[in-house]
Image 1 (tube, helix red, strand yellow):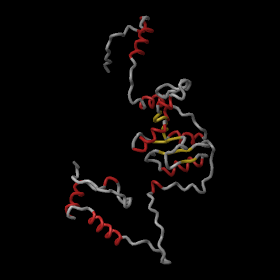
Image 2 (spheres, rainbow, N blue to C red):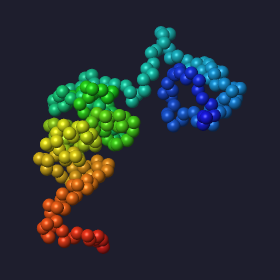
Image 3 (cartoon, rainbow, N blue to C red):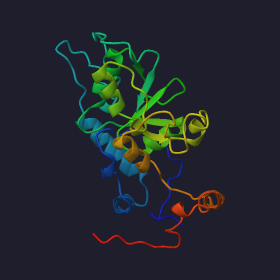
Image 4 (cartoon, one colour):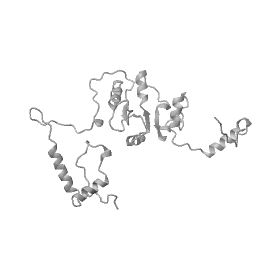
Length: 248
């Protein structure tokens, strides 16, 4: 049973439609209308449509009568031109950045050039050579894929490093995501919520730690242990059993 109610037999990609955004893709109603108008087949309709498109699109020709090579790579996938950039510092030496997403106030080229100017490099794809995954928000398919890397850093870390011209430590306020296996590498340094034991934190650090807490699970054995440890002292248990409401 198909929702269309048709299925695609032997589907294949003929070309990528970079001229259309994803939200303008063919819907089911339009698909059914095309099938009905072509006697139950999309094949002839697509062939006619392709011929019309080919006739309308004339290749670009220069003054010499030669065809120009037109790039079909969309702008957001084209690698940033870093030729002619002058080095400012080497704070990002031996680091490879991958940008999951960027804030509206900055474009991807800006961050690529900023990284290179400070001794680092960047990758257009998420691979094993990437050392730092950078993001502005926890959204999108690319973010879900980057989670497998184990650690995702907020873009403000790069801006702050470049502003102060030093490689800043990754405080909790800069951590958007830290996987369990990444935490377990340093059990003596960091707790389960990405809070380092020996670093002081500020309000922004604490807020980010709370934001990163997807769910908080309470271990009954831990609660029992603390009750046994502290309830013996009346100073720590005189509110036991009370449910308090603070009237503003």
